[in-house]
Length: 143
View 1 (cartoon, rainbow, N blue to C red):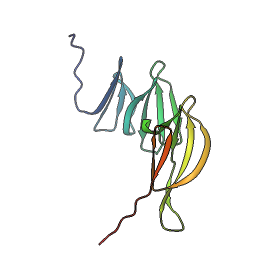
View 2 (view 1 turned 90 degrees about the horizontal axis):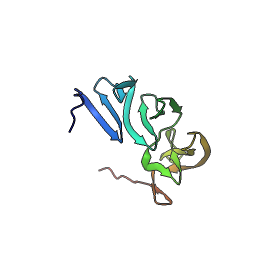
View 3 (view 1 turned 90 degrees about the vertical axis):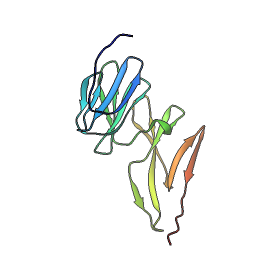
């Protein structure tokens, strides 16, 4: 085994092939020891040939692992919401006329990270399972 380097004060990290992503407690995100963003909030995960992360402004940034070019989207991407080569996302949550939490729902392309179409709003939460979109509606009782 060959010793390469020591990185201190790491909060989160992810590794894919030859790429290393890590963040520190100051909110800085690094890719292969190069500062990518100093306004990092969470994720820093790998998806296909990209590192994606969420800055503090409710967007998702995709960094190409080969070119380090950044693509900014106006939505939140999570790998678990990938849906047959595209992904489902929400841009905002709000209370509807029945006082239920509702969120908008969009289908985005993973090839160019652009919006394909808006889908009917979802009450509660959603997640993808195989080729199905499952909506979760939670009722809470308070004593």
